Length: 384
Image 1: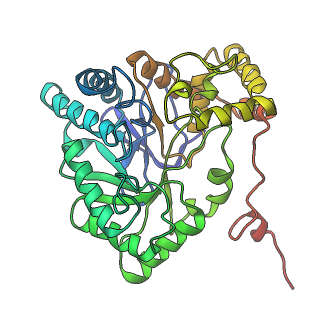
Image 2 (image 1 turned 90 degrees about the vertical axis):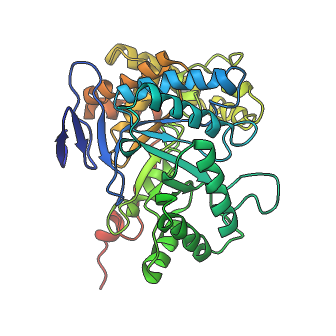
């Protein structure tokens, strides 16, 4: 499909809120504008959740070496966003320490790839410690949490700082004022949210507009073939101006369920066997009981027959076809995993409307069309 706006920068292409047009050669990275930030973000990005700083071999020096190998490959293939959070790792913050040290070493060995002006670094603030004031979205914790994250990441500022979840105990105006301070102090270039409701995002936006403060400009929601309601329905009005919400989606593979590796049970050493991720087992059992795993098996066979790709590549390509997805967060602990993920760029180009319809028929997960204010239902409503 044609892009709304394509601009070329050297051998890279910038895609403004449009689907990527891929070549038949090696995977080519494409870029989309991230909301109203003015930042161009690669449609695939690299995340540290549930990977670095949490397993044997992925902490300390070994973790740094693994991260360097994957991050170097990511940059060589045009990925420019690297996502983290103060709570990632065990203990908390370990993932940021690994990422910070990896970046510091890569700046020495690959200086042209790791210019600070050419990459985007993120963190998220919400859970920073066990103390009652070391969590939440008070101005105190936002300021102290971000300062500690910058130290761990070994950077002077982050490009994106997220409120990792809504805080029911802190007034939205307090949060907006605190995040405005972070942006205007130079600690971050812009701020956004993660798993906030549409109502909470619009409340924060209009508080900022009315008080001359910095509004949230992007959201990090879960989005995949099995989790669609919020992204496709609830957020529907937010993709247009004045909000023009950018998105950095997490769990595009539904925590590995969409890879098909859990179709016949839980493999030893997989994420679902790790301490702290027991909640995913319950989700897996729910999908098994509902017949979803059988659908994934059918779709895996369909992907191989019709596109010659893996279920993983299909799941990522399916997300890429949604033009409201600014970037997809990938989690890889081996270069070969990342290489497999990058092929999804080519698969996305080969996915036709007919293919998408066949996928819908197999999955049956499409949510009802948005019918709220500003949606199709309101536009077609006639009153007397």
